[in-house]
Length: 150
Image 1 (cartoon, rainbow, N blue to C red):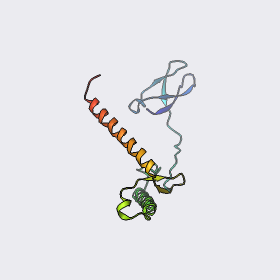
Image 2: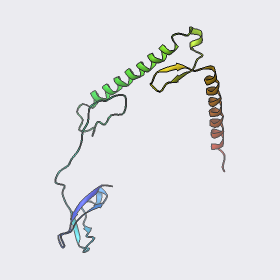
Image 3: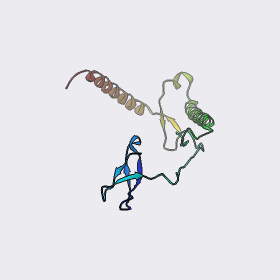
Image 4: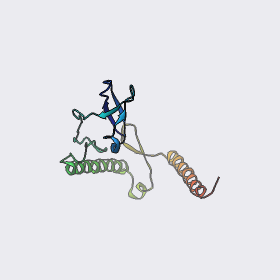
């Protein structure tokens, strides 16, 4: 619900009140003297519009009805997102490049703090397998318990 500025012409008090758009033109009682007040017409509107694309994250394109370049912004955003995806995929392939092709498909990758990837050790892969098993069991339990009444 928007806030509007109101002016009491009896006591001169100005205040803001949250009123539905449909009731903006109706008189509103003054909180000081209870006289009917009229909504003031705004003197100006301030806004911020940013159409710069900064990377593979949702963009602040402003109000779409005012953004004459929305298609270009969305297209550039999608292109940057796919480029970032391709870069991550290439880094993952490089991490698996030293392995024979039949082994590469069986190995799990872990992400390092610097953003690079490495092949998990056998111990890490075993722990990861246990985590996935526990997760799958929890999801099956959750799915089966949704239908029952507590």
